[in-house]
Length: 381
Image (cartoon, rainbow, N blue to C red; front, side, top):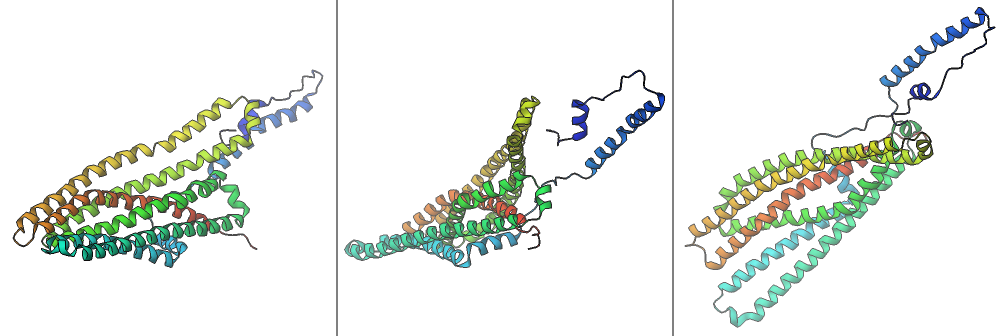
């Protein structure tokens, strides 16, 4: 039963041949019995070969390569263009106000009469801070509302298509795969996608604000920034390719766990009757181990990424400080301090940026898997 319910094997193990021991039987009656006994094996072999060649349950497909841009479009469309535009606007204004407040403090410290106009400078600074708080709240609210709307929309599409799926879909698809879509993949959209989208949006605009600030203070920094960003892109692309495929493997190897658990609950009385408890426990442990194998390579990939990102971030800090010193004749102390302080922040921001890009693509795999089941053929209504 654990080995795909092979009926022929079950008959071989638990049935016995009925033999007529009547010594008075005639030779004519023994002939048909022997004939039936000799011809009973080939049909079983034919059945076995047929089962091997054409299995009823289809193997779950695993995507490869980059997640198609069409998947991102479908997620944005499910979230609605209003919330998408609101997220971009909210975080752009938030980081613009953050950089503006830093420039305003720099301008304040340069004013020789700044102490006499404290009310003026504090008033403008308070207005900038208020605008930043409002825009940040608006951006966060837009992400929560938009991601929940996308989750509800995709869940409704998935549920509708599964309900109207033809019977052959349920014959060839283990229930664990369907449960996996409705549980883990929907949970990714409900909770994890919100956090990833929030951190990614904040990180992207923070990176743009930091690089713009450093470039304004020391324009020659652009000559260093371009090659460093090219290297960042290559590292990010290499890491995302590995991380994305590991995420797909983790999702695919999770479905057999659900399927085996569901089948075990349905056949628990039969399992106990044949004393197959230990065998089913071992099969369950093996499937869990197969699923957990994807996490160790993912941890190694994270260590690989951390080393390279730290090295590049330190390069940015070094060149920002060096160029600020070389430009000391055209910059005052406040501007140099602002440039170096922003360069120190870029280490954490760029690390989070690469990780969040990878995490976003990993989470979009859930949208890809849900979209796969929304494309199944519906039975005639």
